[in-house]
Each structure stands twice: as structure tokens, then as C-alpha cells.
Image (cartoon, rainbow, N blue to C red):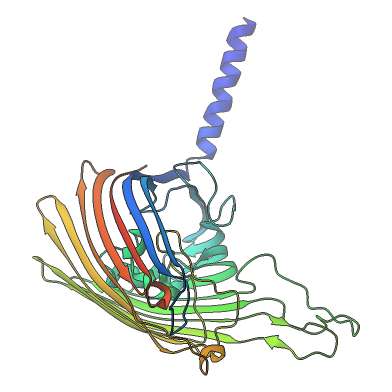
Length: 390
């Protein structure tokens, strides 16, 4: 009798939990395969590189998160009545090879938002999330859809390279006949919000210690046409070495991008152009080599370009693109020095083939030269992989 009552109680408890979680969805992506990665070049911008050591690094083995970053997440909503919903999304990125957290070891580094949504007025989200350029531009302008490592649009368009901001408030309208507008503001793009100190004996007295960011954009997707226009800006933190010393930082880094695509059915054409001024946003790693952006990049001007094609082949899809990041001027500290910045080119070819609605295989080949504007920097990526979505 006691066992029957206990079983009934447990079943009732589980039923209650199931009922309470009917609006919650568990989802994720697993992406892994075998590949080859190589970087070779002289890690210097000096115009005369005679006698400088050439860096060569390569590896063959497990690759993961190439087509899509590995992740798991929870998302859900509660109907509040009159068309209003409370919504949330928690998304965690991880390395398939080691199981370690990504995004700076954050538990929910990919996204952590809470908000309100309505079919008639749109959605308002609070928390860590991607900027508008990363949401709007890759979907219409990049044949690789913002994935496939160095092949994606972010290699040249750093403000669309899956830029994530902490402490963000974002509003997006509903889709009106293909049109959607979004705008967001971050009170501090990376880390906890800092207090503003008022203390005449402190070097940080009165300084803006938060790096604040603005993101906005408009996209249109209807029928064969897709277009997106985005603008992003962040202002670097202010610093002072000692009381009374000059204030450094406080520089505004800006980027705007325009991209689009047209589907001719037998082939889909993609184009994009953008400009970034006085710095960079999320810098792409090439074969594990990343650009050191710790110092000021004020004065840097980069024009970005993309030309791409995608086409159905049987049940699968072929993708090809060329991206270029053209440094029109060097940072102020390099203007009068013996340094040289070169145009970065990336040439990529890929293929995906579905095995089911949730699982596909892919192949990718990508070659980059003058990576991070290094005159001798070359990066190669070759790989085949399997991706499963749940």
C-alpha cells in the first residue's frame, strides 16, 4: 500500500513538472569531424622583414564547431494574455573535443536573455546577446550563413562576426511584409557594469569605465530578395595612469554594412560592402592565430567586400565566396613608421548534404592570404564533418 501511494505521488510530481515545462524547449547543435589547419607567416607588420622568423603551425585531427558552433540551450515563453508573452533564452557554447565552455568560460556565453514579446509590437530582450549586424547580415549576404570558420563573412566584416555584448537591451519589430528593424544598447559590452568613481585621489575619478555599445539595422527578406543594412558603434573605456595624468581611451569604433542576395533558383548571388573605422569588433581567428587588439587602433580604416554564390546540387548545396578586408589607413601609431598593411583575401568553397531533417554532412576548403593584414600571413582550412541538430 505504501509503495502504491509513493508511486502515485512520484507520478503526480513528474506530471506536474512536465506540465510546468510545456513551454520550455531544450535544443542544441553538435558539430565535429576531421580536418587540417595550417598557418604560415612572419608575425610582423614591418615593411622590411629580412631576418625575421617565419611562424609555421599546423595540425591534423579532430575539428569541431566548423559549420556551426557546438551549443545547447533552453528557451521558452509564458502567455500573459492579450497577445503578450514572457520569453527567455539561455544558450551555452562548448568544445566538442574537450567538453570545455567557450565564450570566455561563461556558462551561458552564447546568450542569456529575458524579455517580453507581442505579435503586434515586437520583442524586447535584456541580457547577453548578439548584435544586430550578426543577426541580420549573414543570413542574406553570406552563402556560408555566418558559419564555416574562416570562410564566413566575419573574416572581413568584424562587426558581423557573431559579436556578443553583455548588459544589452534590444528591441526588434515584428516582420512587416519582409521588413524588420532592430536596435540595441549595451551598458558595458564585456563584463559587469562598472561604477563611476568620484574621488579626487583616485586615478579613475570621473572616468567612464564601461565600454558602451550601440547596434541597429534594417533587413528585408521576401521572395528571392534579401537585403540588410546595419550600423554598430562602441566607445572604449577611459583610462588614466595617475591623478592628474592625461586621459586615454574613450575612442569611438564604428562600422556600417550593406549586403544582399538574389535567388535565381539555379544559383543564388550574394554581395556585401562595409566600412569599419578606428578599430575592429570581433576578430576572426585563422588556424588558431588571432590579431592582438589590446592597444589603440584609432586611425585604422578598413573597407570590406564579399562576393559569393550558392547553388543546389542534388539534395545538397554548394557554397563559394571571396571576402576582402582592405586597410585604407593604418592606426595612428603606425602611420609614420616603417610598417605595411596588406589586403586580406579569403577564398572558400564548401558543400553540405542532408542525411535527414536534423543531420547533415559537410566539406570545406578555405585559403586566406595576408591574414590580419600581415604581409606574409597565410591560413589553410580543409575538413569534412557531421552536424546534428536537436
